[in-house]
Image (cartoon, rainbow, N blue to C red):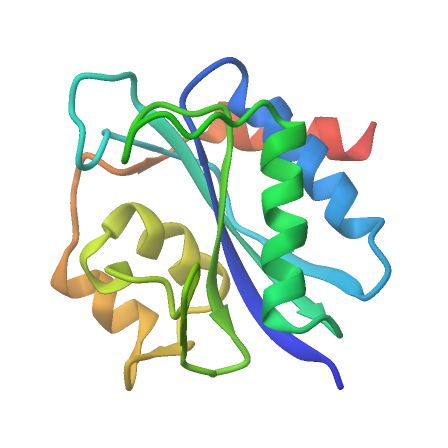
Length: 171
């Protein structure tokens, strides 16, 4: 059975756009995953820990035959391959890949919470997600409605990074 899932990508160390492209190519080449839609890349201020560089963020819509736990394992493997080191909560990172939604399911298990916790508070997640799945329901509300409640003018589409990502994916 194929399930529609959404992922959030983020990073602020090294070259996040290249890290996103590498991870996206790996996802697209993975058996049981079909990448359907990509958001633009957004430039966002840090959240939680403020003394670090701006982040680049984006969202991905995919279909998968993988159970949620296996999708999480694949995402964590891509993070490790991208040089992710988990040193501090909300700290700087080369790449972060979060499962935002998984087929409308609610999952609350050790190490796996879907929808992603605090998604409704995070405009940096909702802005790219609203671009590719505005009517996706999170906690009974559409993503676009959740975004309206937390709109943040400091979160902006980065056309240069978006075009670069498209170029890297095409090459």
